[in-house]
Structures are given as C-alpha cells and as structure tokens.
Image (cartoon, rainbow, N blue to C red; front, side):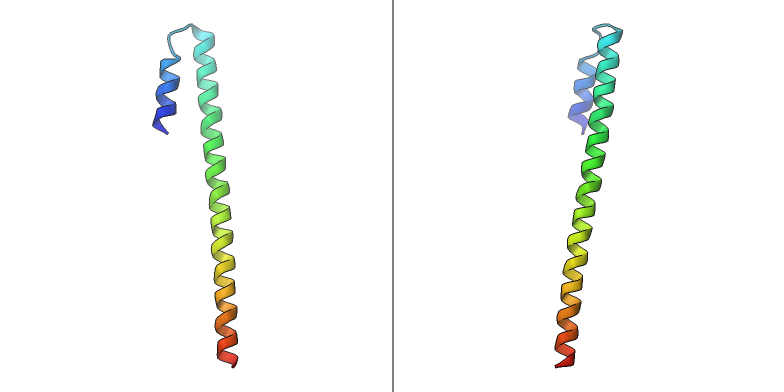
Length: 65
C-alpha cells in the first residue's frame, strides 16, 4: 500500500546509495505483496471449487434417491 510508498520517499535525500536501496526494497515489497495476493487467490479458488464439487455431488445423490 500507500504507507510503504511514503516510507520509500522518507528514506530519500540521504545520498544516491540509500535512495537506490529504498527503491530496491520498495520493489521487493511490491513483488512480495503481489505474490501473496496471487497465492491467496489460488487458495480461494481452490476452496470455492471444492465446495462446488461437494455441493454438486450432494445434489446428484439427492436426485438419484
């Protein structure tokens, strides 16, 4: 989020090396955030899919009875 962006801005103004470091850290954080969001989405989809499958099986059993 935005709070991490402001952190990178605050780290600014201490010479080129710390500026580059702040930018590298920011990119790493952004990448990690993206990865964790994708992971969560995969888990969510898996949960939804298995729930749907369970429901479908229940319905089929009920229809066969």
